Image 1 (cartoon, helix red, strand yellow):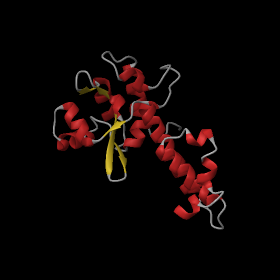
Image 2 (cartoon, one colour; image 1 turned 120 degrees about the vertical axis):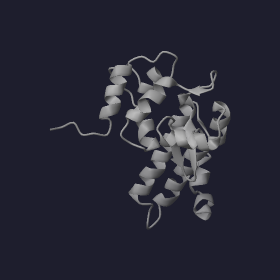
Image 3 (cartoon, helix red, strand yellow; image 1 turned 90 degrees about the vertical axis):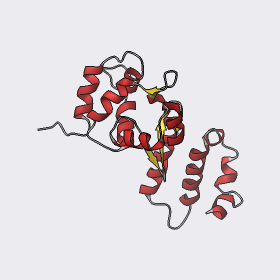
Image 4 (spheres, rainbow, N blue to C red; image 1 turned 180 degrees about the vertical axis):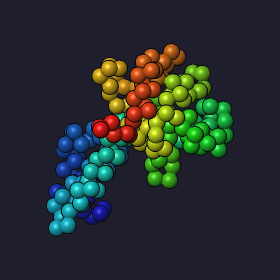
Length: 180
């Protein structure tokens, strides 16, 4: 793979002249380089892998735009609890954690850092979601909703959550087919 990336005229050299590619973060750049390296091959990277790489890049960019993520040890320090408590709170859906490889990352936006807590609105809504998938929970919290004029996280991550009834209704419906 490294040879494919570094060959003269290859993706790495092409990327060094493309401002849009250079503006990507490390994960985005690496994903894009891998995709480009496999494009010209006899057996190109299959579509599923290309979509997965782009999805991972999009998720990383979304999380970065919302303040980034923390590791379990950082969350434990912020909340003044042990890492085991962090894991248990995630398992009980009182804390949003997204699996990335061997680690679980915790989106920063869910924390009231000044008061060293999880926003109460987030703790209230997460258990209503009929999924244990951190990625699905994240998708719910950050998906725009026209009636809310924003996403649920915009309304939940504050001292006085707004639109709580509508968000709770959406949370209970999330992942369910409503067609009859």
